Length: 352
Image 1 (cartoon, one colour):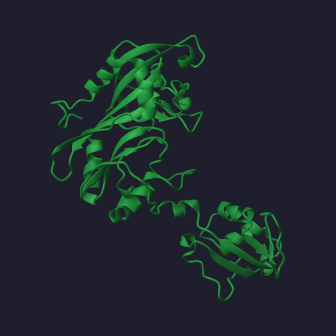
Image 2 (image 1 turned 90 degrees about the vertical axis):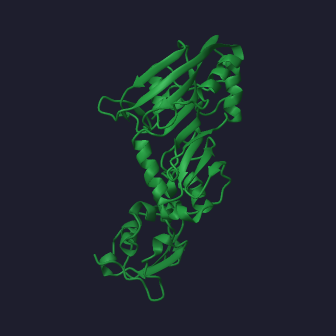
């Protein structure tokens, strides 16, 4: 079937996906007689997917002979007049500037370091096409629009708080991406997990891949990508009564984790794999405790060679209020141990 011909005066649709609201109209010809409305609209607006056009119908943005039509399966008749108010897809609207308050720890002409709050999505994706860190970066400085992913070179999960470095120039982005790939960027995290564990270092070197049962999870997979986490248990406590969420006793352990790779959900998967899921991490079996409503993970320290000067730069971010309150249940000794692990050390420079 030939595509329906848009009537005189209607936009030709070449830029329809970018417009806020284009009205496109046409008359059903003989070839369109008996066609479903949604299939007919695909020919009228081929730059949009059929599922998006079905959503426009459901949103009462399509009229047949002047009457709103909300059934995608409606059969059309030759001579009927169709109007559709085209709206951009969520994806096409995703990469737009959105002013937002960014907690910027450091910024110069080459890069910035941001302290991301829990709840902020880093990059647009299904279910989060706006309000992301990327949208905020596009509003923060004009050069972000010229860079892939607005200069983002690594990510944190939505409900993980803490430090991220973001490039502001192509030179800086290229250098930072290479440094991360070469394991020359040092990323350290603080975490609270279920269960008691002996104090000291546990090297978790297990490959990670997509969980074959649940696509929202990652898992230890023999054919996954190599992943190593140096996880140091700083101490444990037995919670009683109300703090234990109703159970008689619950063990909680505090961890310092250093990434040697950056797989999706890496620390969450690795600690769960040795029997210590993070507090409030329901995806990997962690129950909500100590008032936490998100996984107990914070990117506390970030160190790297500056891409322009080569100088070794070290940045730290204190625990946000929700995690700070939870950590206090483990006592001063554990908090001092965490502070010691995060101190600037002489072996930092390019230590990987």
